[in-house]
Image (cartoon, rainbow, N blue to C red; front, side, top):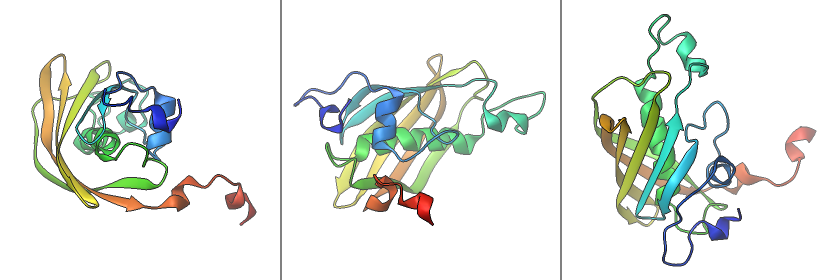
Length: 169
C-alpha cells in the first residue's frame, strides 16, 4: 500500500498491515512490536495490536519457567503505535518519530505468551517537531499498561536509503 493512501481523505484508515507499518517505521524484527494497525487517523488516534507468542526472543530470559513480557517492551510497542499516529500524513518517508519521554506509566497486569496486546494511542498535542500522546495497552479488555509518551519528530532521510551503498563500505 503506498504511503499516500494511509489516510483516505478526511476518513481514518481502518486497516494497516505489517508491510505498510514497515513503510512508516524504521523498526524491523525482532524490534518491530506491532502486528497490525486496525485504526489510523494521523495526528489524532491509532489502535493496533501485538500477538504475544512464546517464541518471542525475550521470553528465554524473562523469566525462565514464568514468561512475562518486559514492561519496557510494552512501552516500546505503545511508542511504535504512537509513532505511526503522531506523524503528518505523507511525511513518513522524510521524518522519524523518536521517543523522547515517558511519564505517568503504570503497569496493571502481566502480559504473557498467548495474549493479544491491544493498544490505543490518542494524540494530545503536536507543536512543530514535538508531540505528546496518551497510550493504553489492554489484554482481554483489562488494562495492562497506560501512560503518556513524548516524541521528537526528526528529519533523517539516511534511515531510508534506496540504494545499496551500505554494501560497499
